[in-house]
Length: 158
Image (cartoon, rainbow, N blue to C red; front, side):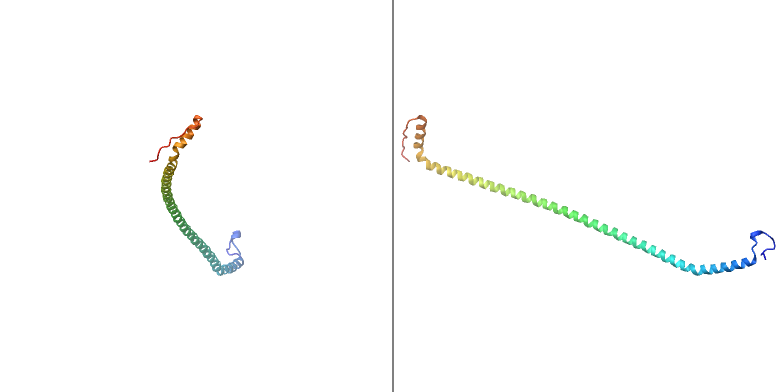
């Protein structure tokens, strides 16, 4: 028996087929109505896990950026401190070198003055020791040059 009294081919299904199809549709509909909330919960849980993982990853990235900025700041401070230390050490070294040079010049001048004084004293002492023998030494030298003995004149000492 057909649903409509006229013959329109496959568009006019039999009533028994419609009843079976309606019952099967209702069963499938009820199955999916009960199953869809479970699917939705699974999809929601998956979405929450994905969003949570993304949020956690973004938080970790932000922490990494913060730490990187902190490390860069600490490194910059360390570089500035190292530059200050190098500059201070250079200045101290230059001051020590200048001080050592000045001290060396003073020691040089003192040694030179002492040497000149010692030479003058030695010269005066040698001159004093050799003064009585000047006439004798001169006659010996003249004798060697001339080739015969020349006697020295002896002058009384004052």
